[in-house]
Length: 419
View 1 (cartoon, rainbow, N blue to C red):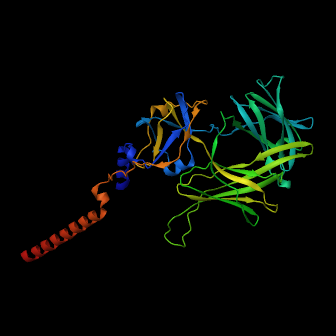
View 2 (view 1 turned 30 degrees about the vertical axis):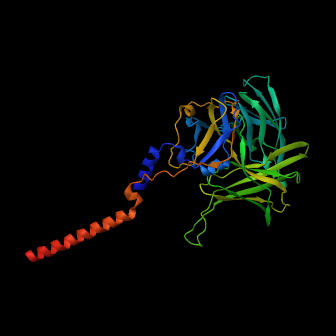
View 3 (view 1 turned 120 degrees about the horizontal axis):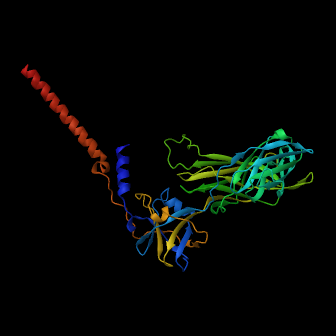
Protein backbone atom coordinates (compact mmCIF):
# COMPACT_ATOMS: atom_id res chain seq x y z
CA UNK A 1 0.00 0.00 0.00
CA UNK A 2 1.33 3.44 -0.84
CA UNK A 3 2.45 5.66 2.03
CA UNK A 4 -0.10 8.32 1.14
CA UNK A 5 -2.95 5.82 1.21
CA UNK A 6 -1.81 4.61 4.65
CA UNK A 7 -1.85 8.15 6.05
CA UNK A 8 -5.28 8.78 4.49
CA UNK A 9 -6.63 5.60 6.05
CA UNK A 10 -5.27 6.56 9.47
CA UNK A 11 -6.72 10.05 9.17
CA UNK A 12 -10.13 8.74 8.12
CA UNK A 13 -10.29 6.20 10.95
CA UNK A 14 -9.40 8.90 13.49
CA UNK A 15 -11.88 11.48 12.18
CA UNK A 16 -14.90 12.24 14.36
CA UNK A 17 -17.99 14.15 13.21
CA UNK A 18 -18.16 17.83 14.09
CA UNK A 19 -20.79 20.32 12.90
CA UNK A 20 -18.26 22.69 11.37
CA UNK A 21 -16.81 20.09 9.01
CA UNK A 22 -20.08 19.27 7.20
CA UNK A 23 -20.59 21.21 3.98
CA UNK A 24 -24.35 20.66 3.73
CA UNK A 25 -27.38 20.45 5.96
CA UNK A 26 -31.05 19.62 5.45
CA UNK A 27 -33.86 19.83 7.99
CA UNK A 28 -36.25 16.92 8.52
CA UNK A 29 -39.74 18.38 8.19
CA UNK A 30 -43.32 17.15 8.58
CA UNK A 31 -42.32 14.93 11.47
CA UNK A 32 -45.20 12.99 13.05
CA UNK A 33 -46.40 14.28 16.43
CA UNK A 34 -46.10 10.86 18.11
CA UNK A 35 -42.87 9.07 18.93
CA UNK A 36 -41.92 5.96 16.96
CA UNK A 37 -40.09 4.77 13.86
CA UNK A 38 -39.90 7.51 11.26
CA UNK A 39 -38.49 7.30 7.73
CA UNK A 40 -37.58 9.93 5.16
CA UNK A 41 -36.73 9.26 1.50
CA UNK A 42 -33.27 10.26 0.28
CA UNK A 43 -33.45 12.22 -2.96
CA UNK A 44 -30.84 12.19 -5.78
CA UNK A 45 -29.23 15.44 -4.62
CA UNK A 46 -27.97 13.81 -1.44
CA UNK A 47 -26.15 11.11 -3.42
CA UNK A 48 -24.37 13.82 -5.42
CA UNK A 49 -23.01 15.78 -2.47
CA UNK A 50 -22.54 13.00 0.10
CA UNK A 51 -19.87 10.34 -0.01
CA UNK A 52 -20.46 7.44 -2.44
CA UNK A 53 -21.52 4.98 0.27
CA UNK A 54 -23.39 7.66 2.29
CA UNK A 55 -20.82 7.10 5.03
CA UNK A 56 -20.82 10.77 6.05
CA UNK A 57 -24.55 11.10 6.80
CA UNK A 58 -25.16 12.20 10.37
CA UNK A 59 -28.52 12.99 11.97
CA UNK A 60 -28.70 15.39 14.90
CA UNK A 61 -31.36 16.75 17.18
CA UNK A 62 -30.34 19.65 19.41
CA UNK A 63 -26.65 18.84 18.81
CA UNK A 64 -27.15 15.23 19.91
CA UNK A 65 -26.32 12.54 17.35
CA UNK A 66 -29.30 10.32 16.52
CA UNK A 67 -28.71 6.73 15.33
CA UNK A 68 -30.31 5.75 12.03
CA UNK A 69 -30.52 2.92 9.50
CA UNK A 70 -30.71 3.02 5.70
CA UNK A 71 -33.62 0.96 4.39
CA UNK A 72 -33.89 0.11 0.70
CA UNK A 73 -37.55 0.03 -0.31
CA UNK A 74 -37.29 -3.05 -2.51
CA UNK A 75 -38.29 -6.62 -1.79
CA UNK A 76 -35.64 -9.31 -1.71
CA UNK A 77 -36.11 -11.44 -4.81
CA UNK A 78 -34.39 -14.79 -4.81
CA UNK A 79 -32.93 -16.04 -8.12
CA UNK A 80 -35.23 -18.07 -10.32
CA UNK A 81 -34.93 -21.80 -9.67
CA UNK A 82 -35.35 -24.47 -12.36
CA UNK A 83 -38.09 -27.04 -11.83
CA UNK A 84 -38.13 -30.37 -13.69
CA UNK A 85 -41.16 -31.52 -15.68
CA UNK A 86 -42.71 -34.83 -14.57
CA UNK A 87 -44.90 -37.23 -16.52
CA UNK A 88 -44.47 -35.18 -19.71
CA UNK A 89 -46.52 -36.54 -22.58
CA UNK A 90 -49.55 -36.09 -24.77
CA UNK A 91 -53.11 -37.02 -23.87
CA UNK A 92 -56.23 -36.35 -25.91
CA UNK A 93 -54.26 -34.17 -28.34
CA UNK A 94 -52.97 -31.96 -25.49
CA UNK A 95 -49.54 -31.77 -23.87
CA UNK A 96 -49.75 -32.62 -20.16
CA UNK A 97 -47.16 -32.67 -17.40
CA UNK A 98 -46.71 -32.15 -13.66
CA UNK A 99 -44.17 -30.31 -11.53
CA UNK A 100 -43.05 -30.87 -7.92
CA UNK A 101 -42.77 -27.39 -6.43
CA UNK A 102 -40.39 -26.41 -3.61
CA UNK A 103 -41.79 -25.38 -0.26
CA UNK A 104 -42.91 -21.80 0.21
CA UNK A 105 -44.94 -19.28 -1.75
CA UNK A 106 -44.38 -18.53 -5.41
CA UNK A 107 -45.99 -16.43 -8.10
CA UNK A 108 -44.77 -16.21 -11.68
CA UNK A 109 -43.63 -19.30 -13.55
CA UNK A 110 -41.82 -19.19 -16.87
CA UNK A 111 -42.07 -22.15 -19.22
CA UNK A 112 -38.95 -22.98 -21.24
CA UNK A 113 -40.31 -23.45 -24.77
CA UNK A 114 -38.04 -24.09 -27.75
CA UNK A 115 -40.77 -23.63 -30.40
CA UNK A 116 -41.42 -20.41 -32.31
CA UNK A 117 -44.45 -18.77 -33.93
CA UNK A 118 -47.20 -20.22 -31.77
CA UNK A 119 -50.12 -19.26 -29.53
CA UNK A 120 -51.20 -21.70 -26.83
CA UNK A 121 -53.31 -21.83 -23.68
CA UNK A 122 -52.00 -23.37 -20.47
CA UNK A 123 -54.47 -24.55 -17.82
CA UNK A 124 -52.89 -24.86 -14.37
CA UNK A 125 -54.21 -26.59 -11.25
CA UNK A 126 -52.59 -27.43 -7.92
CA UNK A 127 -52.66 -30.03 -5.19
CA UNK A 128 -50.78 -30.80 -1.99
CA UNK A 129 -50.23 -34.47 -2.83
CA UNK A 130 -49.13 -36.01 -6.11
CA UNK A 131 -51.75 -38.73 -5.91
CA UNK A 132 -54.52 -36.40 -4.76
CA UNK A 133 -57.34 -36.47 -7.29
CA UNK A 134 -58.94 -33.28 -6.09
CA UNK A 135 -57.20 -30.31 -7.66
CA UNK A 136 -57.63 -26.56 -7.27
CA UNK A 137 -57.89 -24.67 -10.54
CA UNK A 138 -55.49 -21.73 -10.65
CA UNK A 139 -56.37 -20.34 -14.06
CA UNK A 140 -55.83 -20.41 -17.80
CA UNK A 141 -52.95 -18.48 -19.31
CA UNK A 142 -51.93 -17.57 -22.85
CA UNK A 143 -48.33 -18.05 -23.94
CA UNK A 144 -47.14 -16.94 -27.34
CA UNK A 145 -44.28 -16.39 -29.73
CA UNK A 146 -45.16 -13.85 -32.41
CA UNK A 147 -41.72 -13.58 -33.97
CA UNK A 148 -43.17 -13.62 -37.46
CA UNK A 149 -45.31 -10.56 -36.57
CA UNK A 150 -42.36 -8.89 -34.79
CA UNK A 151 -44.32 -8.82 -31.53
CA UNK A 152 -41.93 -10.81 -29.36
CA UNK A 153 -42.83 -13.69 -27.07
CA UNK A 154 -44.02 -14.41 -23.55
CA UNK A 155 -44.10 -17.78 -21.81
CA UNK A 156 -44.71 -16.46 -18.29
CA UNK A 157 -47.68 -17.72 -16.29
CA UNK A 158 -48.82 -15.05 -13.82
CA UNK A 159 -50.19 -17.33 -11.12
CA UNK A 160 -51.85 -16.05 -7.97
CA UNK A 161 -49.83 -16.38 -4.79
CA UNK A 162 -49.64 -20.17 -4.34
CA UNK A 163 -47.99 -22.76 -2.15
CA UNK A 164 -49.17 -26.05 -3.71
CA UNK A 165 -46.56 -28.81 -3.59
CA UNK A 166 -47.64 -30.11 -7.01
CA UNK A 167 -48.83 -28.28 -10.10
CA UNK A 168 -50.56 -29.89 -13.06
CA UNK A 169 -50.44 -28.42 -16.57
CA UNK A 170 -52.51 -28.96 -19.69
CA UNK A 171 -51.37 -27.17 -22.86
CA UNK A 172 -53.80 -26.55 -25.73
CA UNK A 173 -52.08 -25.42 -28.91
CA UNK A 174 -49.52 -26.29 -31.58
CA UNK A 175 -46.81 -27.50 -29.18
CA UNK A 176 -45.22 -30.92 -28.81
CA UNK A 177 -43.89 -32.44 -25.57
CA UNK A 178 -40.27 -32.17 -26.74
CA UNK A 179 -40.63 -28.37 -27.14
CA UNK A 180 -41.20 -27.98 -23.37
CA UNK A 181 -37.94 -28.35 -21.46
CA UNK A 182 -38.52 -26.95 -17.97
CA UNK A 183 -39.90 -24.30 -15.64
CA UNK A 184 -38.20 -21.36 -13.94
CA UNK A 185 -39.70 -20.42 -10.59
CA UNK A 186 -39.68 -16.89 -9.20
CA UNK A 187 -40.39 -16.56 -5.50
CA UNK A 188 -43.06 -14.07 -4.54
CA UNK A 189 -41.29 -11.08 -2.97
CA UNK A 190 -42.57 -9.67 0.30
CA UNK A 191 -43.88 -6.25 -0.69
CA UNK A 192 -43.31 -4.18 -3.79
CA UNK A 193 -40.48 -1.86 -4.74
CA UNK A 194 -40.83 1.90 -4.46
CA UNK A 195 -39.01 4.15 -6.92
CA UNK A 196 -37.88 7.77 -7.02
CA UNK A 197 -37.54 9.67 -10.32
CA UNK A 198 -33.96 10.71 -11.04
CA UNK A 199 -34.63 12.36 -14.41
CA UNK A 200 -37.44 12.52 -16.95
CA UNK A 201 -37.51 13.60 -20.59
CA UNK A 202 -40.13 14.10 -23.26
CA UNK A 203 -37.64 15.25 -25.91
CA UNK A 204 -36.87 12.70 -28.61
CA UNK A 205 -34.35 12.99 -31.44
CA UNK A 206 -34.91 10.86 -34.54
CA UNK A 207 -31.68 9.41 -35.96
CA UNK A 208 -32.64 7.27 -38.92
CA UNK A 209 -34.67 4.37 -37.58
CA UNK A 210 -33.71 5.14 -33.96
CA UNK A 211 -35.54 7.31 -31.43
CA UNK A 212 -32.94 8.73 -29.04
CA UNK A 213 -33.36 10.15 -25.53
CA UNK A 214 -30.46 11.69 -23.63
CA UNK A 215 -29.95 12.47 -19.95
CA UNK A 216 -27.18 13.94 -17.83
CA UNK A 217 -26.94 12.18 -14.48
CA UNK A 218 -24.85 13.67 -11.65
CA UNK A 219 -22.03 11.67 -10.10
CA UNK A 220 -22.83 8.77 -7.77
CA UNK A 221 -26.60 8.96 -8.29
CA UNK A 222 -27.91 5.38 -8.62
CA UNK A 223 -30.23 4.53 -11.52
CA UNK A 224 -31.95 1.15 -11.14
CA UNK A 225 -34.36 1.09 -14.08
CA UNK A 226 -35.59 2.99 -17.13
CA UNK A 227 -39.37 3.38 -17.52
CA UNK A 228 -41.08 4.11 -20.85
CA UNK A 229 -44.52 5.71 -21.17
CA UNK A 230 -45.74 5.16 -24.75
CA UNK A 231 -48.70 6.85 -26.39
CA UNK A 232 -51.95 5.12 -27.28
CA UNK A 233 -50.80 4.20 -30.79
CA UNK A 234 -49.62 1.77 -31.91
CA UNK A 235 -51.50 -0.65 -29.70
CA UNK A 236 -49.09 -3.52 -30.39
CA UNK A 237 -45.33 -3.23 -30.68
CA UNK A 238 -42.04 -4.93 -29.87
CA UNK A 239 -38.94 -2.70 -30.02
CA UNK A 240 -35.35 -3.37 -29.00
CA UNK A 241 -33.69 -0.78 -26.79
CA UNK A 242 -30.03 -0.06 -26.08
CA UNK A 243 -28.77 1.98 -23.11
CA UNK A 244 -25.27 3.47 -23.18
CA UNK A 245 -23.66 5.34 -20.29
CA UNK A 246 -20.57 7.45 -20.97
CA UNK A 247 -18.65 9.34 -18.24
CA UNK A 248 -18.42 13.07 -18.79
CA UNK A 249 -14.64 13.57 -18.78
CA UNK A 250 -13.64 17.05 -17.66
CA UNK A 251 -10.00 16.81 -18.72
CA UNK A 252 -8.16 14.66 -21.23
CA UNK A 253 -4.48 14.22 -21.90
CA UNK A 254 -5.14 15.08 -25.57
CA UNK A 255 -8.05 16.18 -27.74
CA UNK A 256 -7.77 12.99 -29.78
CA UNK A 257 -8.22 10.73 -26.74
CA UNK A 258 -11.79 9.40 -26.62
CA UNK A 259 -13.67 9.18 -23.31
CA UNK A 260 -13.51 5.79 -21.61
CA UNK A 261 -16.37 3.46 -22.59
CA UNK A 262 -19.30 3.27 -20.20
CA UNK A 263 -21.57 0.39 -19.25
CA UNK A 264 -24.36 -0.59 -21.61
CA UNK A 265 -27.41 -2.80 -21.49
CA UNK A 266 -30.11 -4.01 -23.83
CA UNK A 267 -33.77 -4.83 -23.50
CA UNK A 268 -37.06 -5.07 -25.29
CA UNK A 269 -40.24 -3.01 -25.03
CA UNK A 270 -43.36 -5.05 -25.58
CA UNK A 271 -47.06 -4.24 -25.67
CA UNK A 272 -49.59 -6.69 -27.06
CA UNK A 273 -53.35 -6.24 -26.59
CA UNK A 274 -55.13 -8.37 -29.16
CA UNK A 275 -57.23 -11.44 -29.87
CA UNK A 276 -55.57 -13.96 -32.17
CA UNK A 277 -57.00 -17.35 -33.08
CA UNK A 278 -59.51 -16.95 -30.28
CA UNK A 279 -56.79 -16.25 -27.68
CA UNK A 280 -56.89 -13.05 -25.66
CA UNK A 281 -53.33 -11.69 -25.29
CA UNK A 282 -52.59 -8.96 -22.72
CA UNK A 283 -48.88 -8.41 -22.19
CA UNK A 284 -46.76 -5.34 -21.39
CA UNK A 285 -43.06 -4.90 -20.60
CA UNK A 286 -42.30 -1.19 -20.43
CA UNK A 287 -39.24 -0.97 -18.19
CA UNK A 288 -35.61 -2.09 -18.50
CA UNK A 289 -32.98 -2.61 -15.81
CA UNK A 290 -30.28 0.05 -15.79
CA UNK A 291 -26.64 -0.93 -16.51
CA UNK A 292 -25.00 0.37 -13.32
CA UNK A 293 -23.60 3.26 -11.28
CA UNK A 294 -21.17 5.91 -12.48
CA UNK A 295 -18.78 7.56 -10.03
CA UNK A 296 -18.49 10.59 -12.33
CA UNK A 297 -21.19 12.68 -14.03
CA UNK A 298 -22.43 10.65 -16.99
CA UNK A 299 -24.29 11.05 -20.25
CA UNK A 300 -27.07 8.50 -20.74
CA UNK A 301 -28.23 7.68 -24.27
CA UNK A 302 -31.32 5.53 -24.74
CA UNK A 303 -31.99 4.39 -28.30
CA UNK A 304 -35.23 2.70 -29.40
CA UNK A 305 -34.80 0.66 -32.58
CA UNK A 306 -37.98 1.16 -34.63
CA UNK A 307 -36.84 -1.08 -37.46
CA UNK A 308 -38.93 -0.34 -40.55
CA UNK A 309 -42.00 0.71 -38.49
CA UNK A 310 -43.11 4.19 -37.60
CA UNK A 311 -41.37 5.58 -34.50
CA UNK A 312 -43.15 5.08 -31.20
CA UNK A 313 -44.78 8.20 -29.86
CA UNK A 314 -43.29 8.26 -26.38
CA UNK A 315 -45.00 10.50 -23.84
CA UNK A 316 -41.94 10.32 -21.58
CA UNK A 317 -38.92 8.29 -20.53
CA UNK A 318 -37.88 8.20 -16.86
CA UNK A 319 -34.72 7.19 -15.05
CA UNK A 320 -35.65 5.84 -11.62
CA UNK A 321 -33.80 4.63 -8.55
CA UNK A 322 -35.11 2.35 -5.82
CA UNK A 323 -36.15 4.49 -2.88
CA UNK A 324 -33.63 4.55 -0.03
CA UNK A 325 -35.06 5.65 3.30
CA UNK A 326 -33.25 7.01 6.31
CA UNK A 327 -35.12 5.59 9.32
CA UNK A 328 -34.78 6.58 12.97
CA UNK A 329 -36.73 6.65 16.22
CA UNK A 330 -38.30 10.07 16.63
CA UNK A 331 -38.68 10.74 20.33
CA UNK A 332 -40.35 14.09 19.61
CA UNK A 333 -41.76 15.93 16.65
CA UNK A 334 -39.15 18.47 15.60
CA UNK A 335 -35.57 19.63 15.62
CA UNK A 336 -33.88 16.97 13.45
CA UNK A 337 -31.16 18.09 11.03
CA UNK A 338 -29.26 15.93 8.54
CA UNK A 339 -25.62 16.82 7.87
CA UNK A 340 -23.27 15.49 5.15
CA UNK A 341 -20.32 16.47 3.00
CA UNK A 342 -17.34 15.42 5.15
CA UNK A 343 -15.11 13.05 3.18
CA UNK A 344 -12.97 12.21 6.23
CA UNK A 345 -15.74 10.31 8.01
CA UNK A 346 -16.12 6.56 8.03
CA UNK A 347 -19.56 4.95 8.11
CA UNK A 348 -21.15 5.06 11.57
CA UNK A 349 -21.76 1.86 13.51
CA UNK A 350 -25.01 1.99 15.46
CA UNK A 351 -26.71 -0.72 17.50
CA UNK A 352 -29.92 0.72 16.07
CA UNK A 353 -28.84 -0.21 12.53
CA UNK A 354 -27.70 -3.70 13.54
CA UNK A 355 -31.01 -4.45 15.25
CA UNK A 356 -33.16 -2.52 12.78
CA UNK A 357 -36.46 -4.02 11.65
CA UNK A 358 -38.45 -1.95 9.17
CA UNK A 359 -42.06 -1.31 10.17
CA UNK A 360 -44.55 -1.11 7.33
CA UNK A 361 -46.55 1.49 9.30
CA UNK A 362 -43.53 3.71 9.98
CA UNK A 363 -44.31 7.42 9.95
CA UNK A 364 -43.17 9.33 6.85
CA UNK A 365 -41.32 12.61 7.20
CA UNK A 366 -39.90 14.81 4.43
CA UNK A 367 -36.55 16.34 3.54
CA UNK A 368 -36.24 20.12 3.54
CA UNK A 369 -34.18 22.07 1.02
CA UNK A 370 -30.43 21.55 0.92
CA UNK A 371 -28.37 24.48 2.23
CA UNK A 372 -24.73 25.25 2.85
CA UNK A 373 -23.77 24.72 6.46
CA UNK A 374 -23.16 28.29 7.75
CA UNK A 375 -20.64 26.97 10.28
CA UNK A 376 -18.62 25.05 7.67
CA UNK A 377 -14.84 25.23 7.71
CA UNK A 378 -12.36 22.83 6.10
CA UNK A 379 -10.84 20.17 8.29
CA UNK A 380 -7.26 20.99 9.32
CA UNK A 381 -4.69 19.23 7.22
CA UNK A 382 -3.58 16.22 9.29
CA UNK A 383 -1.01 15.00 6.82
CA UNK A 384 2.65 14.71 7.91
CA UNK A 385 4.90 17.66 7.13
CA UNK A 386 6.58 15.69 4.33
CA UNK A 387 3.20 15.00 2.70
CA UNK A 388 2.27 18.68 2.80
CA UNK A 389 5.63 19.84 1.42
CA UNK A 390 7.04 17.05 -0.79
CA UNK A 391 9.45 19.47 -2.52
CA UNK A 392 11.31 19.99 0.74
CA UNK A 393 11.77 16.24 1.07
CA UNK A 394 13.24 16.05 -2.42
CA UNK A 395 15.47 19.06 -1.73
CA UNK A 396 16.74 17.44 1.45
CA UNK A 397 17.45 14.15 -0.34
CA UNK A 398 19.36 15.97 -3.10
CA UNK A 399 21.39 17.91 -0.52
CA UNK A 400 22.24 14.71 1.35
CA UNK A 401 23.29 12.99 -1.89
CA UNK A 402 25.43 16.00 -2.84
CA UNK A 403 27.03 16.05 0.62
CA UNK A 404 27.80 12.34 0.41
CA UNK A 405 29.33 12.93 -3.02
CA UNK A 406 31.61 15.68 -1.69
CA UNK A 407 32.69 13.49 1.20
CA UNK A 408 33.40 10.62 -1.19
CA UNK A 409 35.55 12.83 -3.45
CA UNK A 410 37.56 14.21 -0.52
CA UNK A 411 38.12 10.69 0.81
CA UNK A 412 39.34 9.56 -2.60
CA UNK A 413 41.83 12.47 -2.83
CA UNK A 414 43.10 11.81 0.67
CA UNK A 415 43.64 8.17 -0.14
CA UNK A 416 45.55 9.06 -3.31
CA UNK A 417 47.84 11.53 -1.46
CA UNK A 418 48.57 9.01 1.28
CA UNK A 419 49.50 6.39 -1.29
